[in-house]
Length: 233
Image 1 (cartoon, helix red, strand yellow):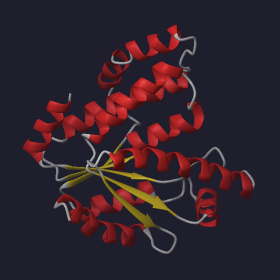
Image 2 (image 1 turned 60 degrees about the horizontal axis):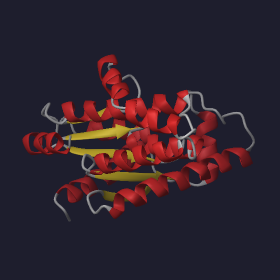
Image 3 (image 1 turned 180 degrees about the vertical axis):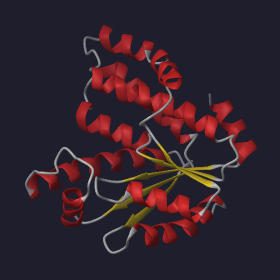
Image 4 (image 1 turned 120 degrees about the horizontal axis):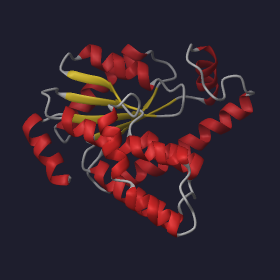
């Protein structure tokens, strides 16, 4: 798989970037704004809405980790397996998109989000089988991702955005303290995953606050930073 990724990157030169951050940090709107700034960029690719064919391929690749976890007496839960399937399917989608001629792939809720989500909700599920799959997956994505952008804002800002945006969220109607705690759990999980990717020396990590800027302003700030990251500066 790594060789296929290397071939795709050499042929297309596509920069693969994931935007991550707690709910309300502005990932989706900033991804769209980055796409609007550069017609050669592709945004909106992520874990959701992937082709069934790729999901089936992702499911087949999980046979060994699922079996190992069950054999160890810690069978993986269906929701965890579903997210793991999507991570594998997204890897295949990114490999295909990298040779489609675009200049930059901007992922919203990609592998870093998935690994953080799994850590938050299923961190001990699967025991040894889980740990090996996580290590292998992190290594594979370290060879695909060029940059990760960690977006964040104050707890109060995140809570206000969660409550006022149109799309639903599991803590939207909860008290502030519960929203703050939810954001912090994800903040810590993102920190762990991004730290592991950073330690590989393969992935550029950028950190941006979104408290005082709208999505177009943040995208305009990010664009030159991503260009610098592409050139290794």
